Image 1: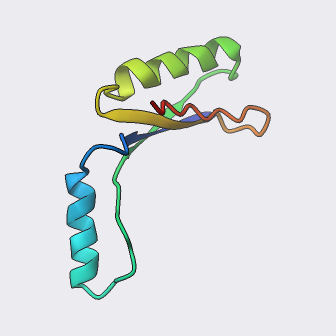
Image 2: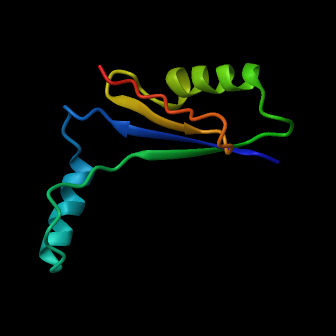
Image 3: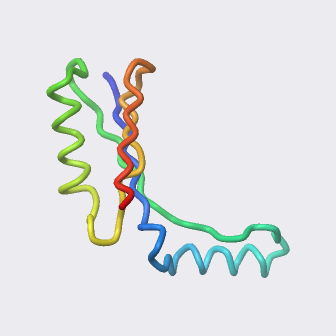
Length: 93
């Protein structure tokens, strides 16, 4: 069964308080050298059947409307598990 992976990150222009906390913890524990840390979300959707164009469009819509909050997050990548579809879905803007 194919697994589709959707990656969602906070918009670059917004403060990422979790990332800032992790960056502080890294510095405090002697793991210096990181300019910043950003924390996002990863969704894994397992599909019962084949991945076709209709499913790709449906997953794109789900990613933009349900899995992410378009006000504060971007869908940065959708991996359909095959090399023929480089399905990056950056919502830069």
